[in-house]
Structure formats: structure tokens, C-alpha cells
Image (tube, rainbow, N blue to C red; front, side, top):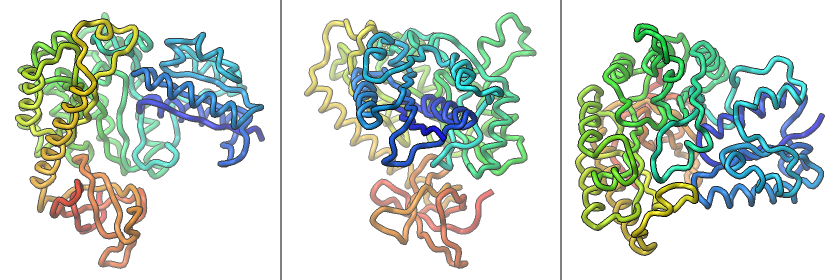
Length: 433
């Protein structure tokens, strides 16, 4: 039986697509190579969001070629799409897949007759990613992704529903709906149709929440302006099935920086939408991304970002120093912020992020959280860590009073206690839904 090794860099969508291809190749007779066993076929899913992503992709390809000298290498992903000639010149690369829409054709060339419409499991995870949409049409000045994934494509709801059923039956207790531009789910399918026939993300959420399956839903990153009242209603109507957590990408809290980024809204509109979320849901977790040191960012503009973060009390902030991406307008903008200034601002925002996280976690004290056990603590075998519905990390005893032992993938109801070392210390009170 031929052997296979896969490696994924980048986002959740990439991780899903690698799993889709891997399970398809299993149908063609491949099996995963053991840890030190040479593989006959290697698949690398690359990332090109930053120059570092390109470099890591090249390093991964060279390393696989060295460790598996007789293997064919198939390379896909955003770096492969952006620079196929560079990728093709790397050692042992036999094929470069420049468009993820080609994956079914690739599987057919390997002899797969019935190409799957989705995956049946997400190996090594209890929280599975499900790709529902691909493509982005925006023109943010810092982002290369719309040039390598420009084609909007939404999966049929029926395929997604079947996939979630399979994942739940296989033991996955949480499904994260993800896409390149999640809020545009259904957009290209709605063109030319009456509004009464439009397909929206809220429709998909409602249908998935109604499934008779032991699984909860979480939305991946979404643009704030696409968190509609209809979508909020779908979340509010299903508090036990849909996690009260939204990751809304802010990037900056400064009106002038957002204009230079060519974002579609200003800070005031973003804040207003987040306030709407807080009114619609009970103690929701709001998380976000912020780019620090965008070209021309002044101290006053950075202070505006700090003020918005504090006002909105994000429970988690992913902080990124601006990295010029060749091929994007921002890379050629004047007044690039010095590295040492970006580093100092990253540190300040990260300190605020920790403070806001602990403040939000403390506000949950005494409440009951649904927690998926992720694993045993490395240095404390009598404790486990889990992820709560509100995207909080929870530390709790591994052994329960009734004699049960918590294992990875189990869902339990937990009473939130004190906040310690960036975690909520919890007490399990019973099985979750």
C-alpha cells in the first residue's frame, strides 16, 4: 500500500482542504506514513499571507524532499497559486495545484471514482473545521489573498449538513464554520434571484442548529458589517447549539488608518455593530485581529486603536505587526513604521489584551460554561484544559466526584471560578448537552 505524508501551513481553510485531499487519497489506496517511514507521496498546502509564509512553505518542501527522497511532491495553496514557477523549481515537486477547485480532478487522476463532497472526520481534533465558502472580492491594501483566491464559491447547504452529521457521528463535538470570506456565504448564488430565494449564512446556521446531532457550532472570522440582525437572531435562538462567540476582524480602531487600509467601514460603524452584538447575545465573547504599525500610523492613531479595544472589551486580541507583502499597495506606501516602534506598540497592545481577557473571564465567574476537553496539562497530569463555548480556556480537575475521568473530546458543564494564569479555573458539574 503506497504511503502518504501531508503538511499544512496557514489558515483553517487550508487545514480543511488538506484533510479533504488526504481522505480522498485514502480512497485511492494510500495510507499515512508512519513517523520515520519514507512516504511515496507528499502533499504540501502552502501559505502566502506574509513573506514568512512563503519562506516556511519553501523550507517545508525542501525538508520533505530531503526526508522522502523517492517521493512525488504535490504542492497546493496560496503560495503555489501566487508563484507556481518558483514552487515547480523546488526539489521533487511533481505537480503544482494553482486552483483549489482542481482538487476533485486531482483525485480522479489518482483513481478516485466517487469524489467525496466533504470529509468524514478531522483527524487528531475534536473541534472540526468545515469549509463552507471560498474566495474574497475585497481590496484591502495590505492583503494578497483576493489575488490568489478571487473566485467566490459557496458549498450547497445539503453537502455541509451531511458533512456535519458525519463529523458528529465520528465523535466531533464542535464544528467551526470557516471560509475565506465567511460573511459572503451564498453571495454568488443569489445573483439574479429574488430576495425571497437568497441563501445567507443565517439560513445555514439555523439548519445546522436544528440537526439531531450531538455537536455545537462556532463561526470563524467574520466581517463586523456582515453580522446582520438576522444572523444574530439565529445565534440568540440557539444558545445551546451555537457558541456565543464572534471573531470580528477590526484591524485598526483609527478612522484614518482604516481608510488607508481601504476597509469598507470606519471605526464608529464597527463599534456600533459590536454594541448590537452585546445587546443581542448574553455575555458574548468578542475576539478580533489588529494590525499594528500600518504605514503612516502615528502615535495618536495607535492610541485610537487602544481606546476602541478598551471600549469594546475584547476577550481576545490577535496582535500582528504590519509586514509588507509584495504585490499589495500597502507595501509601497510611504512612511513605513520602524521595526522598533512596531515592536513597542505590539507589546503595549498585548498587555492590554491580557488585561481585557482576564476582565472578561472574571465576568463569567459563577456561570455555567459548556467545555470541550482538549487534553491533559503537560505539567499537571491531574488537570485538563478545555475550550468553553465562550472561547475561554478552562482549567479543571481530570477526575470527577462521581468517579469519571475526563478524556480528550468529552463535553462537560463547568462552573467558572477564579482566573489564574490566563485561564478560568473551573469545576465540572455534569455532562454537557
